[in-house]
Image (cartoon, rainbow, N blue to C red; front, side, top):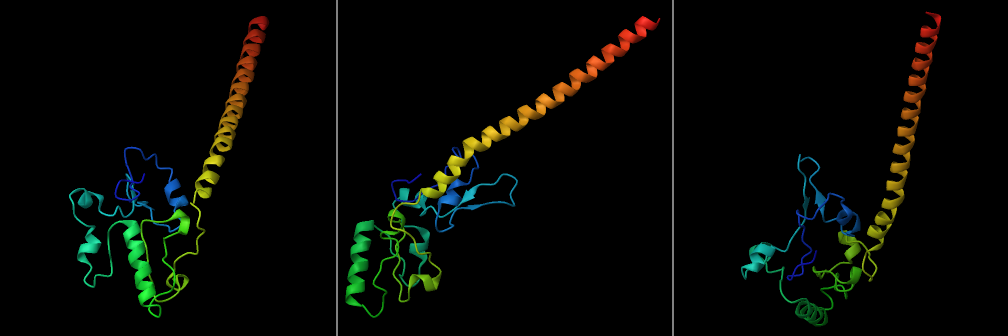
Length: 178
């Protein structure tokens, strides 16, 4: 869920462990603690707790070169466009994250094409198709499991009834022969 600071945050009280957030994120950011006995989803929260106290995210505060900026998204886009216009030889003419997947909360400038630094080429529309695909598979999967379990139950009950009928027949035959 996106909070007032722009970060999509993990709420462990609502998480059911489906990991759809991992499947939907085009950047592969949410990670699951596979090695933990009680695993959680982990990802950057833009230090929402710090922002709630009026502070910047820790990475911005700690950045020794000032390469990281934090603030209003529209203001950051305006600043990025000014930098690109003022120094066209220093930056690729593209703000990564401005339109990708509907616009992200992280924005990047780069002196080389983003593909060369490992950024995926993404559509400009919001990514919901992955979660839609996964969610649409759930009802048929649940139906298949229910049908399978019903079938197994039916076979076991039938075996039990046949076994009971056989036992009853043997008892009747034993009584008749007495």
